[in-house]
Length: 206
Image (cartoon, rainbow, N blue to C red):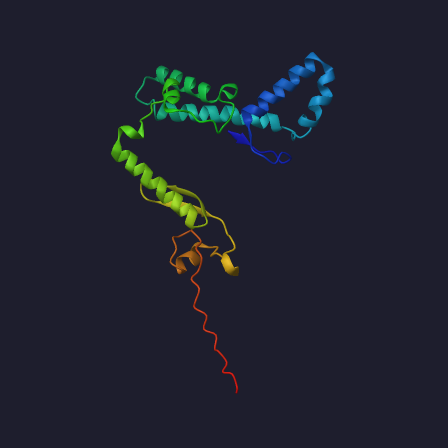
């Protein structure tokens, strides 16, 4: 989980913040001469920032454990599913081990830590379906101002879009109503069609 403070204008891993603060505490405890080194860093933290990171980290672990118990490991016994989920969360949430939120986790690694993974290559129909959705989303992002798409199994979805300035001074339609009026999907602003230039040409006097 990432967290953004009001004075630090970047997303930071909550586990990284807690880890860094604990390191600062230990180094200052071992040698007060380290205070000037850590003071500029800790001074950027808002009051209660570290506490919020600790609570967010605990909350995220509880949520993921619950999802795993009730979803992927639901067929297991109560004690077994709890232990299984806790082991997976510990492996994925270990900041010292993972180092970064963007670190790639291979199929083998995911299976090794206890996740029940189905490889797309093992099911050609599933692979075709997933790739079709992926390509459709990529095309939507490239050709519209949509930045987020959420849709459930009932084909009910929501699209988040940003308002951009179109080419040649033509504004993009900012609302779903405007998008629908020009033939676009609901919630996805599209560039309105331009009418051909019909300026009356003045006849030159001889």
